[in-house]
Length: 316
Image (cartoon, rainbow, N blue to C red; front, side, top):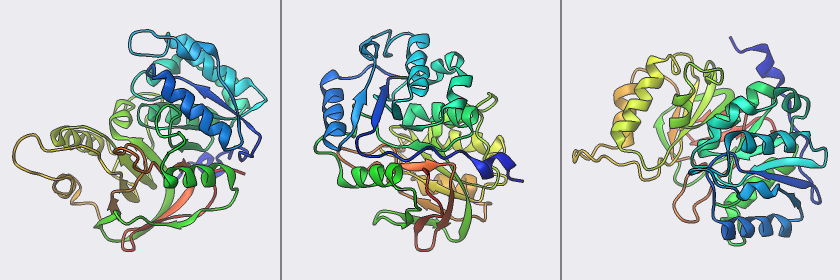
């Protein structure tokens, strides 16, 4: 059964021109020039931008110590001026901030939170803390800049600024792996991060959901292991549909020339649910699109079209 709380997820207020976007760095440190180009683009789009100077700190590979990175997040949720929170960079380290998050502050101040890749584990944690819709989308020192993909920009603004369903969306490279049609709550993100959550308080609940999975630069044996791990953990037992991202640079290094489809057929061949491959959200090559996905809303996966239909908006 779907948990009653999932039917009443809090939708953050929509973003408007002139609103303030707070930027945090929960993971890797980042290129300052690229970051400032992202900030400049957000300002060109009509938003104010706020971030703490500690965002430029460095500790090991990360943007400062764990408690300091978490404190950035706590402050942005507490700040009434901030209407949305974007991440500067993904990479690694988000999981280390979770013990230092102020659950009371976050649960009392639900707002737009955007990120992907390593941020997946933080999205899942924040959703559980505040029972709110979160957003799988671009980062400031990555895809957001003056020459950013028009598709990335279109879906970022549409998803965060329009309090109405996006309706049916489809893309030329979206392929059918298994036919069918199903409706459920959209969840998911980076496969490696979702597996790391198994057995923890932010373990993803896939029952009766439409599950989105993506990753980058992994040997297909690793992808095979992740899918099998998810299966053995029961994550596909009651799932209603599967959406795979582009799985950028995930190759068979064994020399046997296997493909993602071969792995899916082998491990998930007993699942009679709709499946598609190539949805352009998450990692991409070059200026490839990173479509913002509201996680926690009702969607319909039509694998025959193929397309994804958003039955409700992620904001109010």
